[in-house]
Amino acid sequence: DTGVSQNPRHKITKRGQNVTFRCDPISEHNRLYWYRQTLGQGPEFLTYFQNEAQLEKSRLLSDRFSAERPKGSFSTLEIQRTEQGDSAMYLCASSFQTGGPYNEQFFGPGTRLTVL
Amino acid sequence: AQSVSQHNHHVILSEAASLELGCNYSYGGTVNLFWYVQYPGQHLQLLLKYFSGDPLVKGIKGFEAEFIKSKFSFNLRKPSVQWSDTAEYFCAVNANAGNMLTFGGGTRLMVKP
Image (tube, rainbow over all chains, first blue to last red):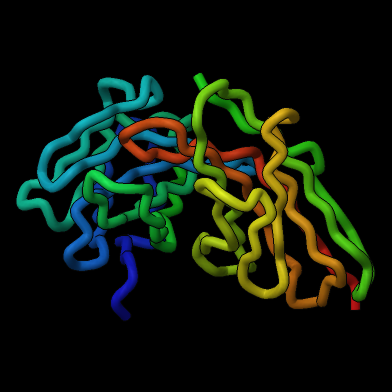
């Protein structure tokens, strides 16, 4: 499968624990996005990378959240000291973007986080 | 900040009925507009997109959408739905260099056979 992959698919954790999710984008895609989707809502933008540089972060991304893309390939999203309000589906998307028109974002299956 | 509104949260139709899902956005500048679909248990997939040109755009599986700039709308239509169209539909807008998407809240469509 050459699409966007995310691991794990499901994560259950206790409040206060740290969790880390991984996203593997489509190879050669230079942009990688993280979104969060809560029940009954559309995805909300969290942050994005162009290669290894994190270029924008939403105000939704509190200090407990950190994302990296160390070699411009896969990315990790870490949530420290999880809270019940962090329970959501975390989606990753990737695209190949040059200076030209918008190119389609391809979404992964998501990681569903449940904080007890 | 841009925002996207989808007026119908749940729609139930019988097969062969016509479909129109509303989408309005708030942003005064140039926008790119999208409809994504999420079939049960599957990833978000792009259904269709509008960048410029003909405001009536055609997508996959017989869907189309019309961009009406004066109304800030991008409604999705299909003349005759099928049971396999049962899914959640999301309208999205991109209006910045980062190309991040702003999504509406989604419309859950159920088509009865």
